[in-house]
Length: 235
Ligand code: GTP
Image 1: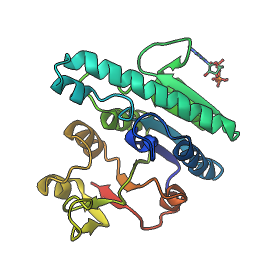
Image 2: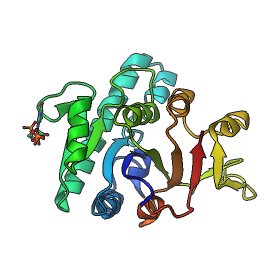
Image 3: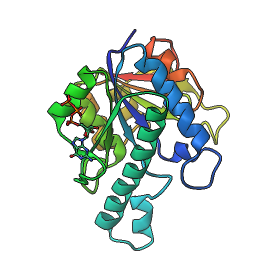
Image 4: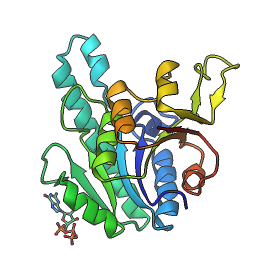
């Protein structure tokens, strides 16, 4: 097993599956089962999930909405996804705790780093909702921040493409995939792996990032076992 403690970043948009908005139950359950597989291998799992299937703060700003307001709405969207994921995980027998960066005591524990680490040590899956709790940050930044805080071995960024390419593989059929890269190479080539805040946090704290296709069942386990799938970004 390559990693003992991970921070799994899931895309909110991917949760839509075949649908135009909201949550596709089939995709949600696929994620839950993939997470169960690695939980049974005693991997300690923290999860951050985006909210793009419900609301995107950046786009709302383009429509004239105040950015701060839009970002807070996006954070609430991540809570909806987090709650859905928590339910899905619990429905197949996993023990979870949901912590929120914005206090909403009736539905989640407040984010407390020490408590999160204790949960992980006890084998509970911890979902970190509401991003960083601050506007002007992305859920990738939240994932990086939580990964640093809980001393995760790695960030596993689950996407719908199977790694980092030199150009958009959905637009260019000749796009070349990287098996591994350093943070500096990714920066020099201006590859968009995460936003710069998230990217810098990972680099400075020497947390590797694996970008992989989360929509193929079984891939998560392969990454944990050290199989060469996706793209590994290291210092
Ligand atoms: P240990 O202290 O390690 O036993 O962890 P624990 O999570 O089992 O203990 P705790 O008594 O803190 O939590 C029991 C349950 O209450 C868990 O499902 C928590 O997620 C939940 N819980 C704890 N604090 C809060 C809170 O502030 N709000 C909400 N909504 N739930 C909470």
